[in-house]
Image 1 (cartoon, rainbow, N blue to C red):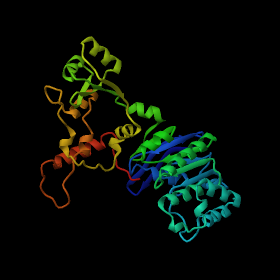
Image 2: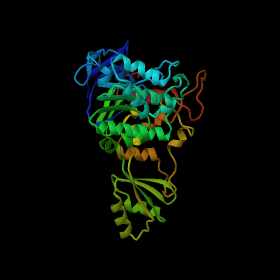
Image 3: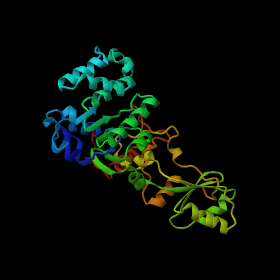
Image 4: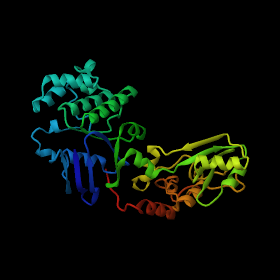
Amino acid sequence: MIEAANLTKRYGEKTAVEDLSFTVRPGAVTGFLGPNGAGKSTTMRMIVGLDAPTAGSVTVNGRPYAEHAAPQREVGALLEAKAVHTGRSAYHHLRAMAALTGISRRRVDEVIELAGLADVARKRAGGFSLGMGQRLGIAAALLGDPTTLILDEPVNGLDPDGVLWIRTLLKDVAASGRAVLVSSHLMSEMALTADHLIVIGRGRLIADVSVAEFVARAARDSVLVRSPDAGRLREVLAEDGVVISGVERGLLDITGLTAGQIGDRAHAEDIRVHELTPQQASLEEAFMALTRDAVEYHGGTAAGPAHAARPDPDAANPIDLDDATTRATGNAPAATAAQTAGNQPGETTNQPGENTPAADEAADQAREFTTPGRTDR
């Protein structure tokens, strides 16, 4: 079990982690998510004693990492896959680590087999691919048969077979009653692997919930409706709290009504409907929505600002999709700041579609609104 209480880390005037509290419990895979610069790596380094907290505390199985007599048997960690002597073979790298804490050669052979390194165990680690380096790092983390496992981006460089292997491994480790903390930027993989999520942004806690609750919290459930009479269907369904967006001719995206309600009203008005498909937010969509204001750097889009809105082919008056979202939520579309790009270095004039200084200032204010202060990872 990992317990963090009011954990804070500052580097000079920069706050990387601020008043962060959470618990990673045994028997579950806990995903550790956040944008770049959120403070994930700094937090993991503090857990294993590589960085000292400025304030607060973090313990593994009831005590700080450095106070464990045999820490490798308490917690296994992969924070940097390249932290290996490149002139050593995988086998001798693991043997050297095992010798430091009295771990047997048999266990070295076991983790080599478990990590799929048997065929390359006697080869120099310096010649390993990124994926093989990841496997070696994971083997090292498992060497002490620890009760707690911490992995930073473990699927980085792995092929599909390797990704499936690490997913199965993490689930098996958690099922045996151990605590697993894993970070990843691959939301699709986290959706398949994690049971619980800890999400941080700019060093602060955003969410500490189950995967299902996290998605539900950010979901904007809608129904995709295809009809040859989409214009009349729009008129029938229009009411307060219902947002209707045109996706393409004959296809509507409707929020505020269930598929059953839409079908009943269409039937009552003798309007043909060819498709009623409920849409649910994915983990990636939920993550993007809940961390929008915690992103350190926003990128532009190839289509530029004009991409933010498109006409509805089935509406008498074209609808701005962002404006529709504003009416449904009461909030201005925060994505607007991310959909425009400022001037390049050395430019002194603003071309059509580029940000003005006032727009840049407005974008900065939007990003700072809910979580003031910037932090580094």
